[in-house]
Image 1 (cartoon, rainbow, N blue to C red):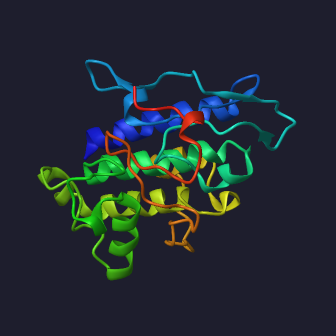
Image 2: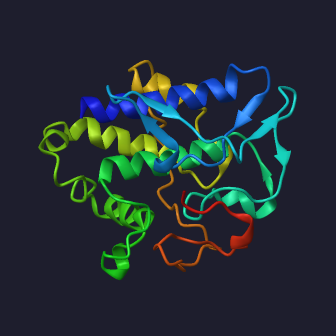
Length: 217
């Protein structure tokens, strides 16, 4: 679990730097496993800024065309007005992918389990959060309490209302033990506009024009 947590912390620190420490706020918009590079020591680096958007420090939001990868799109994209909280939402999905050891959409799973957010939401309702944790990792099962806390942090990041999501600097503080996860979380992650459709690679799509979106690289 220590190595997975280090990777997650590296990603969080990278996004916090982009959002808060640069001259202009940089919203990456396309955080996904393919865009996270690991060196020989498994230090993680955020890469591929082809879809990123600059936001002036005095701006709270920006209007832009839909950008990102199907399956990782935050609900607020329907209005095309976004903030850095889009990246926070995507981070929550990537965090779940690391903890569960699977992609956001997996066609090999039974129909009711193909989308990871459905699995996570159902697991929370039934009190079975650990049942789908990476079954190949004995270490993760040993550290089950810590894994559940990280799942709660993922839920915090995945709030449908972007104003309820934490900043990435707050996520870093939680990972480093400096603060606690928000206690009142909404585990209803599935936005009403989302429909399940798939491309040839089993990716998850929303009711948005695929021609505007980034495909897997």
